[in-house]
Length: 315
Image (cartoon, rainbow, N blue to C red; front, side, top):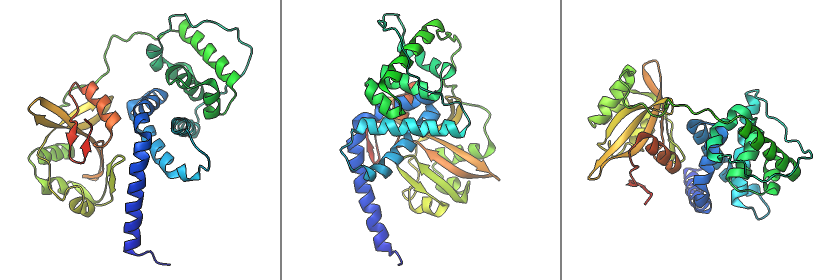
């Protein structure tokens, strides 16, 4: 049976309608989920990738649920198990969650949970870190955590107590050197330099000439384009927005930050990065639609996010 073009268009339209309903369902959970993914992976970049994978999996598999589902537990379960699967593939020690007799103690030890978060990855296994975050930071019950990480409530209590003790015994070292954003990198790849020049001058053909014919253009959780022709007739059909772009180092990765210069000053419009092979851009990724990521990045960059931009209104 051959699928007609009208059938495909119908599928696209229906899937977008369902995605809009799904987004409304999980909207109030998105910020917390993004922070969980960031803390669990120990990196904003890895956390963003985990967040996106979680949302795609959650939307794609929800039809398999035959029972009423708590959206928060559903999302955090997928994020946790996705990360553990990644760590397992990388041959990392996942760790066990052991249940044992532990004397009950009041949590008056002065442990600053927020300070301990960056310390988790170096001291504990991915599974243990998940238990601590879910229980101590995101306020799940021991029973809920046990269901998410596939263990028992008693093991959750014992694990959290042991971890708190270890975090107190081995507090994080304060690093006086900031490893945050480094403004405006001077050394640029020649292709990126050409891309920036064309982008800043509004030269659409100049921008497209730098892409390979089969370049993959992705606006994360927004749209995907699989060729230069699709870009020309799709995301770039109305030309370039006429904004200002600069190169930055953000959380250890070289990116392009696109600014909107409004009446209130510079605002972060988009964050992008590219992969280059044989003198052409073969992969272009934009975070234009990624609200939680954009707000975290804007805080790091020291500029506010553009709240109202085409197709997006975050006011």
